[in-house]
Image (tube, rainbow, N blue to C red; front, side, top):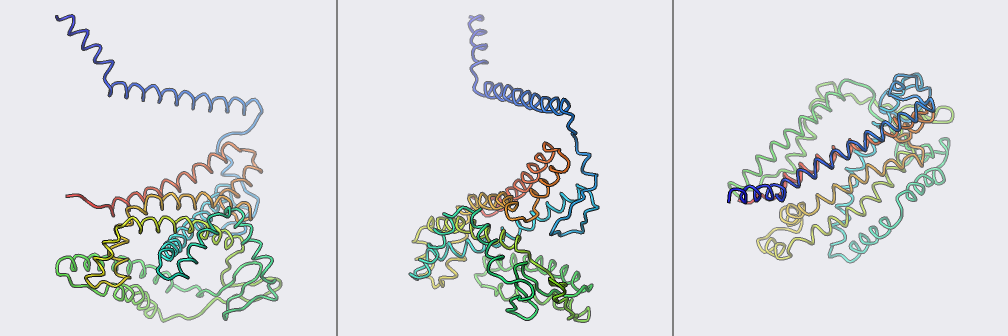
Length: 392
């Protein structure tokens, strides 16, 4: 009897599902680690055999090439490391601005497709069908060519608004002249955002407690505009502007948005927004029409129904696929190399051509885009958990 129990316990140990799962994971981890070690060692041996330099020491060497656009100071005398940092910031600029614009545009188009107005609904659906079915690279080429073929040279610049000039070299526009007031106003605006968020939280709790609505829109607008305006007045209300002026063959002063950046941003936003519009449409349609009728029956206006009833529930359906589209926008920004915008891929490609260290260069590209994607996913996952319905 004791021997039978012993055999049964041994059989049960090997047939246990959890034990097998752990064993399989250990074997898989060992196999992956061995494969990684084999590949890395094989690459190192081949590079040594062909006398190819390895390591990241090249990042400290002089880059010796210019970059057309940069958010930070850069010259050809700087290092490869700083050049790559310029590329990172250029990619971040496109991705950050693109995410905001494409989310706004996609949401608007998605609502348009469900409009009861026949013309608005058809225009929304036409937009989706056109931009969704044209490859994004072709759209980038189109908008890039549009700038160079449609707009004139600087000497014949279009001047739709005083101080704003549109040419085949981009859009030049005036900006405030350097003054301490502007940085102080930026901090004031950041503080206004925090205050507005706190007031909004208070207004929501107040409405839940008493049923009384608070004019949050106008209050928030007053805070966001008023606080920076007060700071501006305290610093002497500076009005001096740095206006672009034609000098030689181009404009000097002000700020310039290059054709490459404009074409890349417009192409990515229009393309990605067509997919987000479909996501928003599906999210709204996932909410029972009975809820809309119930909201209308208690006197809510269509805009209030959308804001207070439909969207809060639809977000649970919208956010997960929206995250994927925002990630696609960031990754598609690597197509900037096709139209000459100096994003990270183009800068890293130039670095590889000059140093010959392709393995390290490609590894840095993968690491940068992986980091961007993980940060975006982390934020969107946090937001998704924040808006989910908590069951009691």
